[in-house]
Structure formats: structure tokens, C-alpha cells
Image (cartoon, rainbow, N blue to C red; front, side, top):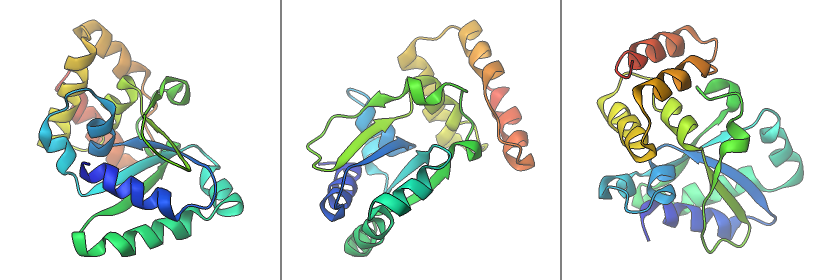
Length: 178
């Protein structure tokens, strides 16, 4: 098991009902690609994207948030954790991101896991000027086999949050691919 699988298995064990999650970041890349580079499996955390309103649904209908706390407490000594859950309007994504997600197989009892689709995983990696994130974006683009014209279209259609810092970082990162 890689670290993402350990974290998710721990969360799954603490859940009392079905929960659907969409992963992004290195955990999504470690679980969502065949033969990913080994460094993807070394990530210490799992990050997720929630559609608008999902956080409230999880609070009202599940024990998700307490399960996250229990999993993080259990994994603290190993320095593994479930860290960030962003609402869709806080992440650079395509307007159709939910329909483009890729299912993540696994022996989960209560988790239904997805990763962002290739376009959205690529876009989410362009939210900060960071060499690792840019390398990850190149990996996704390379695996998808996109042409420069396809990448320009993806960038043009991106839904960028209205947060000035994210807009600025996205513009800088986009230059690396245009």
C-alpha cells in the first residue's frame, strides 16, 4: 500500500456511511495513473475537491468530518494526514469538472473515490508557481498526449477563482504551457 492508500483505508474504517470524494494532488496521481512515478506515492497527505454544498451535506448526513479527525489522530505518529478540502470555486477547474472525473478502484467499504479528470488535474496544478506542481502538470499533459493547441484550449476554458493571488499564479503558470 502506498501512503495515499493507507490514509484512505484509515478514513474508510472510521466512516459510518457511504461518502463520495474527489481527490486531487499527488494522492490522486498516485492512485489514478498506471505506473505513476514512485514519488507520487510518497505524499504525506490526501487532498480533496468538494462541489459547492457538499461540505454541508457531509456534515448533515455523515460522520465524515469526525472520521477525518479520527483518521488524522490515528495517523499522526506516521506524519500522514488528510489535509485540505477545497470547494470547487476555490480551485482552478473546468466548468464540467464533475462529469470528467475518473473513478479510483480500491477495496473501500464506504468510500466512493474519484480523481479529477486529466484536464482538471492539470489545471489544479497551475494554482501556484511551484516546480513540483509544474512538473506534475507536465506529467498529466504528457500522459494525456495533448497538443499545444489542446493545452491552450484547456487553459482558455479554465474557471479561475476570483482570488487575486490564484489568478496571478495561474497566469504565470499558464505561460509555461502556451
